Length: 172
Image 1 (cartoon, rainbow, N blue to C red):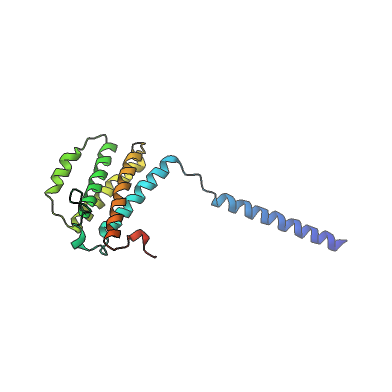
Image 2 (spheres, rainbow, N blue to C red):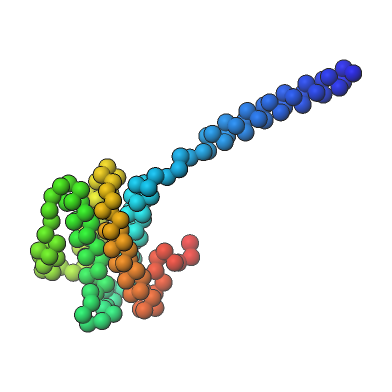
């Protein structure tokens, strides 16, 4: 009888201990559900980080940065610059300012067209954009996100047509 009582006591103690450990582990790992706004912000960051990776990617050779799918379309380098201007527009909007997109694009045409200059401008635009997008989450980002995603798609196509695997599709 004493053995049964001792066994029952030990089993009960183990059950209570394991239950408490499991409960605390469950609450420690439970994350709050993402908000609609946080998903938009994360998507904003992800698409621009992927485009920046492409801008820096030397597997896409410099001599192909002028490639266009059609004479009336933007070159790869121009697509990257266009994305940067889009970042600048959304940053200005978040600050309550206006940025004349057409004037900015025209001024951009006179700048040197090199990978290094495009990367530097895009990094600066991202550094300005990301904190503002986090602080001022706006539904207007959805339209911009869709637009920037189209440019990402064009860049992926440029990679594939030129026989290069885009960075996101390469084996890790």
